[in-house]
Length: 219
Image: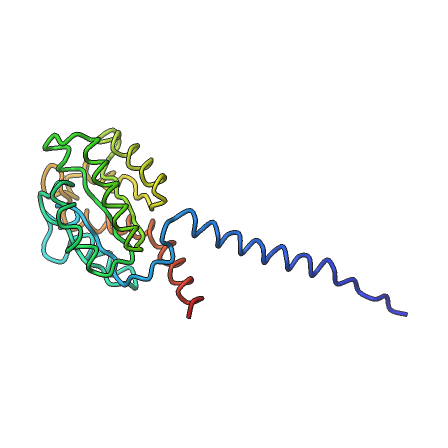
């Protein structure tokens, strides 16, 4: 006579796995604000490093990034901008362009023009708040390299953590010290911008995948 199989352990395992998936999904939404963004475009918002100063047309990092993702990418970088100029054009250049994810890159010109770091951080915080209020994800870019602008790296990382934004660290690391990747003392050339695009891509891709998965669930 065959013994009746006890299905309780199998049922309990399935329930535990299901709860695990729900918990992971919940914390992915909580940890990074607007992971379920309904926007259509990635907006690269910044200064000359976003604009692509020092490289040929089409060699800027947003153009290179567009080759790696399945989402339209808009270059909203303006050469020589500080965060002070940037916040003035946030509405027209970012908020009105249906953002899915906004990659904020400011600080270099602030530093060179002696804008107090506290002022820069306050403005980037305001940019982040306004973008998140629009419903888009935010990624904050750090342009430090080694000890160069290290204090900005620490402050921006803390800001990203506080605001539940993505943090992209040290995009100039290894570039700023390599003459073959630069067009001048600071700006990358085409090769340097391609490296930056790949660094940005590696950080944001998991969040783009999560966003796409959530959109599919809603369909």
